[in-house]
Length: 146
Image (cartoon, rainbow, N blue to C red; front, side, top):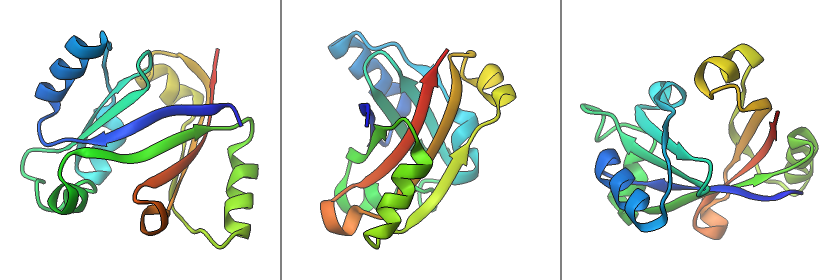
């Protein structure tokens, strides 16, 4: 394990939240909307501050992936991303404990280069269904910089 890569915060207003964390922490955010389109969310990531902000897309306030969290808990940390040398090995360990994976991402180098400023040579994530046990979901990631 390499430690925590970032926290993911559910927010109602992406632009307002970006301003807040930029002013408070000096965070620099990069748009990652392309990663959230299928989930009905707008996404901004600050790699330097270790924060990802997710807000429902306009018109998707009630059916986006973050809508249930916002409805029941309001804004807050909904996921913690842990970085590993091997996300696949970490996933197998989690499965052996009975924890299920809700979805996975494994970006190609072309996607990384086009959408993540070519910052990484590997970007793989597995989101676990851990919210009932610990109050937030856990993501097992293998994010390797160039």
